[in-house]
Image (cartoon, helix red, strand yellow):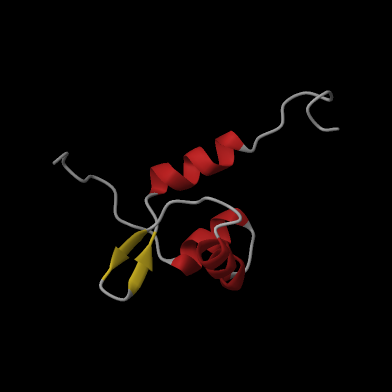
Length: 68
C-alpha cells in the first residue's frame, strides 16, 4: 500500500472547500447523483484531498463553448 502523506478531510472541511453544505455532500453520497469518492473509517466519512482536487478540476470550465 502506498504511503499516506495527507490527512483525510472531514465532511465539514470538504464542504467548506467546495462552498456547499455538509447536507449536500450527504445527498451526493446517498443518491450517487454526483460522484465524489469518500473513505469510511468506522462510522465516519472522510475525503482524500487529492479526490477533492480532482473533483474540482474535472468540473472546471475553461472556455465559453463549454459553458453552454
